[in-house]
Length: 272
Ligand code: DGL
Image 1 (cartoon, helix red, strand yellow):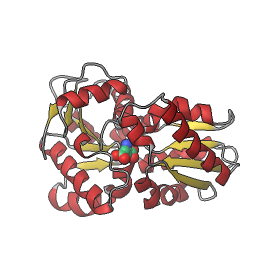
Image 2 (spheres, protein in one colour):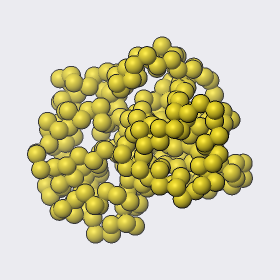
Image 3 (cartoon, helix red, strand yellow):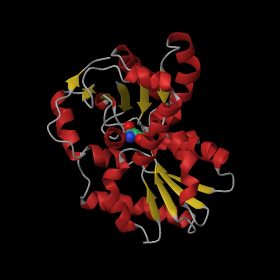
Image 4 (cartoon, protein in one colour):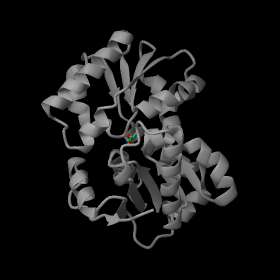
């Protein structure tokens, strides 16, 4: 199984693209719903929570885990890759979603000015500007934190008057900061659920970029380049299955997943 982790439901927006791109692979999704959102938590806390989740996914048989959460990718990935894996799990891999997105994002812009919406944690980590610089040194990157957006999504407020208000407020302030922006990256896996509100607040010429497709294509590439990992993932008996784990109750997960367009999920409730 490929492990897919998010602080809550947001990773489901990435999982959908992964399932389409890798229809014969099995997935194990873990949402740390009981402790979401991660967005405004400290580095230490995000690292600790993410590591617990990764260990859980390893224990349950995933040789490869994708952190389908920008906040966890920005704040915990590097430490897990550099400090934990070589010592404790030398044959396992953890991939994030910041770098694969950074590798592509410059190709979308004509003006060379892009905007990034993310959680406070992702923005303050500086991960996107740092990674993007390696691939597109001349790209002008303006980040903007949207602390209200994840709670709005998690509490089922997409489509409400309140969501429209908070989305427009952040879109206006990003574009006021750099009016030449022609491309905006949704660097939080929850934000696709606010797509309607975001599009309504944006001028027509500004392009929205979602991560799902990018991450799925990069994962396919990764497996092509790492046949030793592909072999380990392909050994399961049943193909194309997804099992869901949540740190909250199964009922809570089922209701929330419904908001993300997934019906009748029966998740397993776990404690770390
Ligand atoms: N979905 C996560 C991300 O992509 C963050 C949500 C949260 O704040 O927990 O950043």
